[in-house]
Image 1 (cartoon, rainbow, N blue to C red):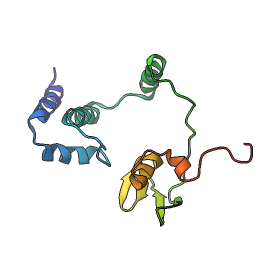
Image 2 (image 1 turned 135 degrees about the horizontal axis):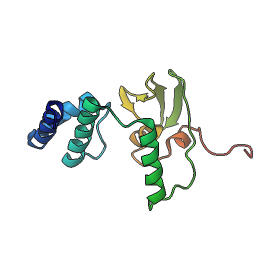
Image 3 (image 1 turned 180 degrees about the horizontal axis):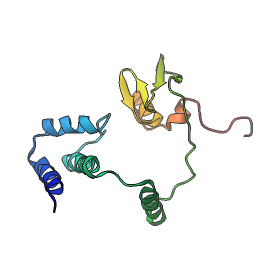
Image 4 (image 1 turned 90 degrees about the vertical axis):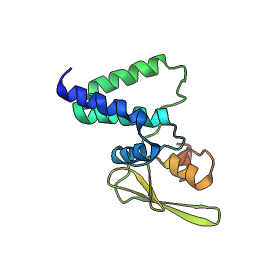
Length: 150
């Protein structure tokens, strides 16, 4: 094991000894938002991955695609349909009336969804935040579904 590998391994080993406040500081360094249902094991494992990725580089595109294909092939959870992709230009504003209020979401340059000063990775996460229940985000904002026989 070389010096760099030993250093990264030592930093990862220390994660289990850190108080949660320090783990959250590290989390905030690597991620734009905190998980909805965090537990220490999840937080430590995600930080450890990011530390390794930062030190040694991430998976190349071909490897990532291969692993995703293997996972999809062997998953017991079958997808109902291929998700529809939306590519929003930065600055796009989505509006929705809900609960006697108008809710405004703006797409950031990074492709995140800004709502009331918070960043969300998906419209579904925004819809869940607004309603308190699970919603398909694109449908909630009037972007999905068939119209006029399409």
